[in-house]
Image (cartoon, rainbow over all chains, first blue to last red; front, side, top):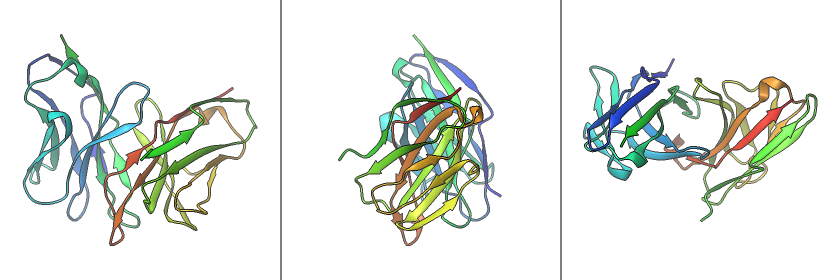
Length: 114
Length: 115
């Protein structure tokens, strides 16, 4: 069965420093992976996806993610954090069968400290 | 495009009451879904639909019904509300390509409290 783990409930980073939000996955076959961001009292916004191709995927707002098949990881990164990046981040994997529903991690709260 | 819209934004129910959460999308997406979000548990899939007239259960379907009479609308019905259904509910939709879904687009959510 497919699953996603986000090992850190909370990540704090100083403004201007690089940030990483970790995600590991488990799925049979080729993984289809997604990152979403949720700002307070809002719905989830799509940031980026990995379907196939380059292991470094670029997305919205300067975010990128690195796919590592051997480590089954899909970490979200940004070279220089902004205070406005403070939000809740979710990693998701597409399911193996049926309608290929998305399975989400429990989320990581990112706080960027001015 | 309005994207995915949900009504109402907030709702308070008493135990045993029923209600319908509305969801609509104007992107002509075949796939639509309902999630609930609870603290520390991420998003859990309640029901989903791969097209008009086709619905199926997700991870936590008990206490909820859905129907899909049009491509645009996917209402979620709470049959007899319970305090355990206090949550934030999100509707989402996705395009499909040869039967596969891709990134989902989410509505703004409905915050439901059951007393």
